[in-house]
Image 1 (cartoon, protein in one colour):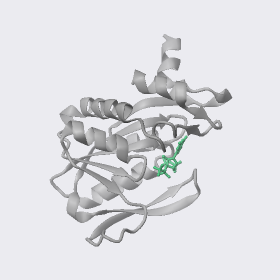
Image 2 (tube, rainbow, N blue to C red):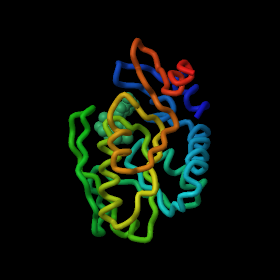
Image 3 (cartoon, rainbow, N blue to C red):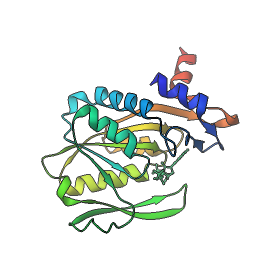
Image 4 (tube, rainbow, N blue to C red):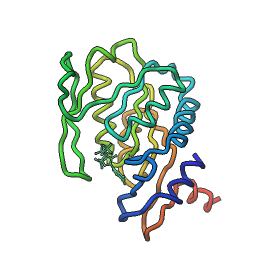
Length: 197
Ligand code: G4P
């Protein structure tokens, strides 16, 4: 998605070969207009999938997921990383280990909101090692619903997440696919492909 790729190049900061900081529009301050365009793009890409629910994870997945939900006219459920006072229904949980942060979280959603009749689109802001997305896939499958697709805002394609999900036969669509963050620079997969042509 051109608009997003340009935004990352203009406003993102490469912190290391592994980490991109995008807290001026995605992870802390949020650019609502950009999120709206992202929502429209996910709605377009997954139009034929008959999506009935969107599932994401707090906190940075919520903004793009809500905008996609608005465009697709379906509810959005976000998995919680901590127990909530009011989340007293029967829960479906999965364990997610973050290699980046070296912490393990139990993530949960209420059984009430996703079930056998649903076709779920999973949305998240970043795809790195794939742990969060795999945890969400686990939860959705435990609910009896079908994972109809996975929509990612920024995929770090040099990390194994996308490959791990595709190996499970899942449809993964990422709006920006980063091939490398070397030398303080963002290089996209499509730039490399264009160079080869
Ligand atoms: P994984 O789920 O793909 O395995 O990712 P990983 O454990 O490596 O990442 C854990 C957290 O770090 C996630 O956020 C993820 O979005 C974020 N993250 C991973 N790589 C980057 C990066 O290059 N830049 C930024 N800005 N974030 C990255 P989280 O802990 O769930 O935080 P949040 O959603 O509450 O913001």
